[in-house]
Image (tube, rainbow, N blue to C red; front, side, top):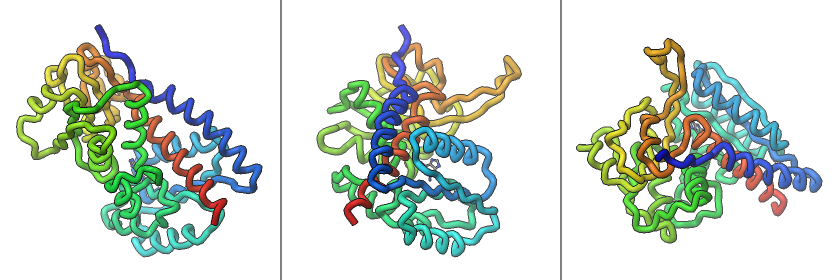
Length: 291
Ligand code: GUN
């Protein structure tokens, strides 16, 4: 029996439908939700991600402005640009696409963005709220999208052994906190490149969430039968058998054969990340009404 799909594409379209209505209402009240995306350098994958974000903004009526900067841009120049955007009442969300060139300190950039416009949810103030269990604010998009997808599919996490592979600032760390929070109550393991016996850790996991950016690193025989698999990775590989390129996740797609639920790649986590970014942007715009 094959796994049921955790269909992020479908859920994201439902979310977009609701957002479109909220955006129309905001516009009637004179608020025009507006996301500014800064892309520094020429990373082909980031260019695709940013294009997808722009398209999603178009679909929901959110204005988006893309600022492309050369890789020679200095940290100070980016900080000054963010300062201008922080003070621009017509911009509600600011996002600097990661990764930036190595000369740029991403933490400094994150700290510069006004917490009320931090639609990535990476500002220490927003992450601090998340640690304290205050979840009404701007939340990191991929972790929030995964939690929504699991909830929508009625996957009960209470008391379950949940392993998150990958400890990034963007996905793994905030996600582990959300999973362990009161009310969700998962028993969380954070595994990473230094973890010993990773295959064994996976085999013991009721829910496995993989965010390491390494194509098909998690093999079929690492999967506990009946477990839930969330694959955050997306990489393009050349298939030696067909000679064609294709998109794969961090988990072998054969895991579908034994898992109970699994996210497809593409069409699983990716669309949910974008849906949460749009949600954060609309929430940020809606809050300006009361200023
Ligand atoms: N790069 C990959 N994912 C993300 C994300 O969610 N936000 C930003 N800013 N950059 C990313």
